[in-house]
Length: 200
Length: 200
DNA sequence: ACAGCATTGTTGTCGCCGCCTACATTGGCG
DNA sequence: CGCCAATGTAGGCGGCGACAACAATGCTGT
Image: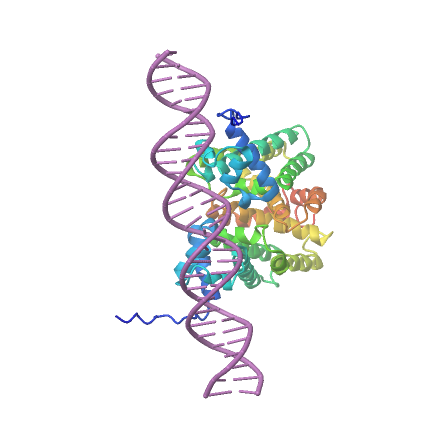
């Protein structure tokens, strides 16, 4: 019998993208710990060393995943922002977009914020991460200009908002809180953030 | 030549505790990823299978580490709480204790909140985690009784405070923010939390 | 005292992993 | 059209987690 002609050409065409797609699928289904380059290669139908041509090591693949995660998160935040809206609906929308992304991509979010990235891509990742905060920075700047928000160090004000939202996302993601409960209580949460815990 | 008599008796005495101590040291120095049962065994001077007698698998060891982490965190929070103090200094003290623990034990904190625990110890861990929130629950209850804090669903109010503090700790821990900067801005952060972002 | 047993530690092995090197195939450029 | 860089393959190395079979030890009941 003549050997079957290979159904797939020797060169894959876009192995890098295929690997990233498969990796993200595995990440979503079985978690970061279950991600192995060899299994990834098997799933993609290439040899166990092929991924090494596109990612110098496993961490490089994780970095690439994290980067694409930030890109999607930033896109989601940008789409959700309503620069013309009043403060409360605007920040609520941003927060909802952030928490929704977190709940939909818990493992990816953990990866994005895991403090173990290669130094070089680290700068690229840091840029993307700062861009995520960018929506909140803009919001605070606009609101301060309109007098809708307390004056004072914009960085501190932004941090207060971002930390609250990120903390909520983290607690919803790591199983401490039920994601639906967090999303359901989001409006109230933002209200408390804006009006404070002290009675007025 | 007669073989050297073993300097250490065949039975270690308290291998479990020794493993946990060594593991936490490694965790602090080289991170979770660098934790291997075999290296742990070597460092402790036992065979590579000995840890298996005390932890059924690697996850069981991680669970035990996380549990001890919660115990120390809860102790730190309990010590830092000043039930007689006014709201703002009291919550600031708690927040400082929480963030300080986070900054001093970043890898451990990540482990504590990693959503990958064995189901059985999971309940034990969940209990310990709820205990951590307990300090904040108490604080909110007291403050509501004294009228120092907004009325309404105590759970929502507690969550607002806890999410803010946890988010701050997370951002300080994962490299997004400089830990010193977070600790330095903590008083202001708590003030914003209490008085809100809206001008009064 | 001591036999029997559960506990705890050891040795050896299996399969999987990440990473490396040497080699094969391919596509593109001069 | 020939050469070279890019991309994929095959094989191997050391380390890992898990398991099984075996050995040393301490405990307990009589």
